[in-house]
Length: 208
Image 1: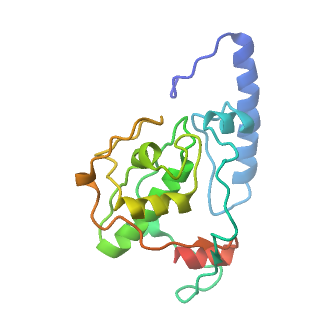
Image 2: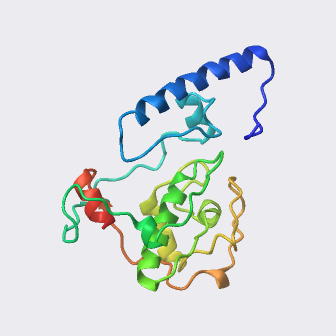
């Protein structure tokens, strides 16, 4: 009822209930380990992992990273020691959680999230940038069919910036580009970016 989910018949309901129970057991198992995070139910609790991937169009991206073009970097650690926490949400640098819905646009949300944090650090106030601006207009990527953050950063740099969420609202579909260049946020275009090595220490160093 909360998520307005309906089933065709009793058999489908029973099948979904069994999947829900499996997900519930997994949630309880993870939460019993006293990890620094907790899991909870949402509108996807009746889906299997494969169904969730299909629903969000999470498929192998046709755009592959070329090892000659992407250099993975180990940031210098100088603010916190290994194992410490560093949380930008408490410092005002992170927008509220967004929902990509049934569109393979996670690359666009990753891109805007990175830019929002960088913009906050440079300008002192938080803005919510438009994922739909990327989904519709970024010719380096594939809209709801996937993409890469590096290619999106490159497009935004060439484009001269990105619009705000309120000016170019999210629709979870790939549409014809309707960008208004007069509304591109001044200072939102990145000048450089790096790919961080996939270790906890390097990630923590990059976050700090």
